Image 1 (cartoon, one colour):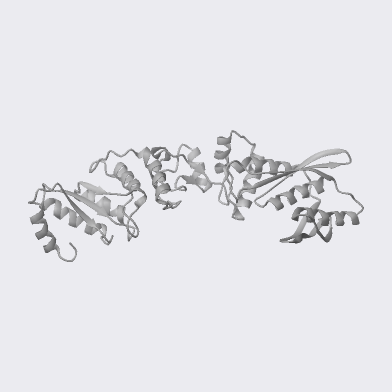
Image 2: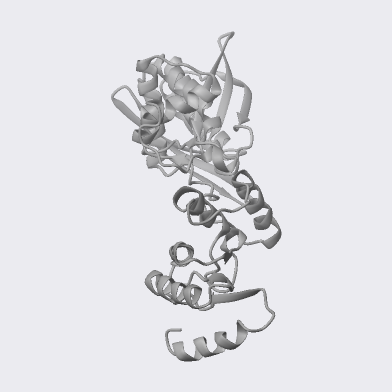
Length: 357
């Protein structure tokens, strides 16, 4: 149409006189602009009023959905769409986005029999069998599109959907999520706590918020399932006065060589540093600590139990909670540490022990 409109019209003059039911108008290379899409289809629909025209959009310039809208406005009778926008090169116009725009903006021009609540399910099914992963930010079906990251949005949801559009997750068989990280506000955390059935007072909520922001600054992924561990760690830390701080450490591990550790500890105003080897990195760390406390004439508690756990469904980057049970002069107590690194979480639990004794 762009290069030889006369040829296309001459060809359609012949085709429309044949016993055919549908004529497909493909933007095979995805080069049409929305204005062209409207002009060309409008011309053909008016010139051949008894012919059924389908429009087939490609997404090379990321204009497929805009072109679908213009095709509908121009009177196209059908659309070629694909699940997850699969197709040549940048793919075809995605089914999920097209259905959403038709239902929200074009009800007078078009109707479909597609069940919106099935779009996400079929999208995941096609993803599984095709091996083509859905981008997390893909509209409608991406994992992140119904996740509120900024606290202001979660606050708006608390205020009867103060900030929202018509793309509500329930339409597509999905649920709103509230991300936990460096941009989390109090409202995000409150929303996640509500789903866990946990309620905190304002002072504790402020401390939990600050800890989650700190974890987010380190680019750690914080999940809703991590929250009970974070709460336990933060509230546990509130009861311990920090007079001992593990300032720095270097841990090494290599094949066929004993792990070693160099540890620097500040006890009140004085700084100590020692190195040692051990059967593992944490054992080497403890042996270096024992050297420091031997200089002070203080014996450390005996470790009687060491438990590590991650949240249900946690992956390799999950937060790790280490719970260590200590025996000190016949008295038993536990300390907890939380970090994405198992050894570091044990060191944090050990620092709490040092402050308790």
